[in-house]
Amino acid sequence: MTKYLLTRLRQSLITLFLVSVVVFAGIRALPGDPALALAGEERSPEALAAIREAYGLNDNIVVQYGRFIGHALTGDLGTSSRTGLPVADAIGQALPVTLELAALSLLLAVVLGIGAGVVAAVRRGRPEEWLANVIALIGLSIPTFWLGIVLVLGFAIAIPVFAASGYVPFGTDPVDNLRRMVLPAIVLGSGLAAVVMRQTRAAMLDSLSADYVRTARAKGLSKRSVIGGHALRNSLVTVVTVLGLQLGHLISGAVVTEQIFVLPGFGKLTIDAVFTRDYATLQAVVLCTSAAYILINLLVDVVYSVIDPRIRLGGAR
Image (tube, rainbow, N blue to C red; front, side, top):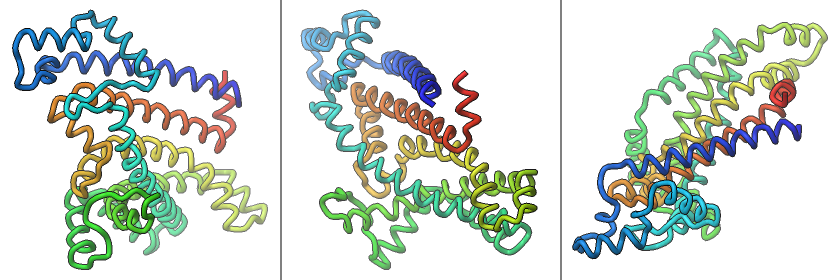
């Protein structure tokens, strides 16, 4: 197990290094002069020269990259040209919002998606399967922005059960926090639940027709034991893969949902950085998002090894 984890960790660190190079070079390749964005309306040659000198923009790209990595390793991600505040502070305020939204959405997707997928596979050809397939198709077809607007109109305005916008930290007021986060979680989680349901159903159908399941039934094991202990466990590798990929998408792709519900999360921070050409913030956001993807993939590999030890033994070679 230790050898397997060390191998995956080494691969993740190499990937993160390559990503940092691509992100740094990509931001520098964007059209426009960062000094002009930092200077604002004061664009005299002397002011531009002073800004380039202060931010090290006159150095070659290798020196700039080395300085960037050195600062990033100490937690210094630069200063926002839009607010004049440290980028690390802005990310520290926005990231918990998006992580909470992603966690609630993922919880909803796991409970509904896996449950409906198992029922659809076990009750194949019966009304339960057709109902689950119809609901999954609806979840995949409804646009995020439309569902968000409908939920706000229905459950925040017509029937004011939930709040329509804003964010309150969970530690400040847990009840008010959930009132503001349930609707966004439903918007994000419904589409993911549909994907998880379809993948769970397909994987369960393969497992239920496998020889080891027929052997378990022939040995007289209970239906619950056959489905939960044998078929579902072997189906979870596929499901975990989907969840890992979709969790990264939730963290980076909640832009529309956060805009609809006015949540000060990672997506809104990204949009603001793009519109104001805040290069330091944009660079940090992309790097953090990439690091999140890499970390999630590492965690997925660890879960793989727990679900199926054969993966751990094969990956350690």
